[in-house]
Length: 239
Image (cartoon, rainbow, N blue to C red; front, side, top):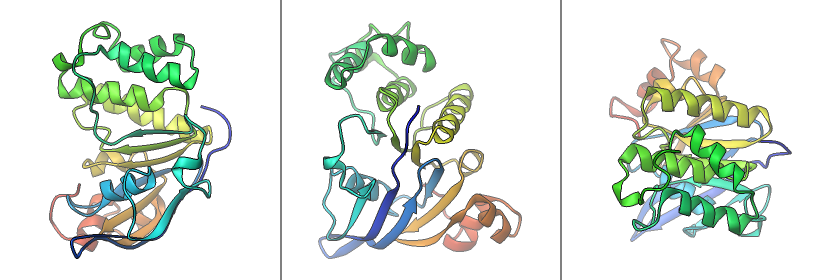
């Protein structure tokens, strides 16, 4: 991935659902050239925040921008995202990627490279209805990475991946950020997330902590991201 990235900025983002605040004045920046880890319990509002960022939901107040503008104003292919990997069950994995590649004007040769990267080359001709959770996740990652986007927004990308897949993803995101990409990623696996992030945002409806990975290690009683999370949010499972 090459070229300049775009900062992701949440500015006072609030979202009400029937009188319940899913997000309350959420403000933080995920900077270009860095991997920002986004953590919190189930229901903490992470996916809602990502949906607002991608223009899939409207905030009640505030704004979320990429490079200073809403997602809809960016050129196609600027942002690669993985929220929930859903696919037409009657299409093959390759067909899904070919449709997106055609829309973005991307050479089909890149599809083969990505299928190799996510170890789906042999299954690429099969209809996605036959795919396992891990295979759908890998196809979703291939779709997100297609065209070398300048921004990646990934919600639980390690879900369903085996250890080799997690290692590959860690290395791929690190290389992307080193090339100037902006990466915002959530994960249940705090120990794994700890190995790939530069910055951390802990969300519980509101931002309860934000800082660098080094700050997190310094403020935790044992130097781990998991312990910092427990200190701030409690002993429930992070999500």
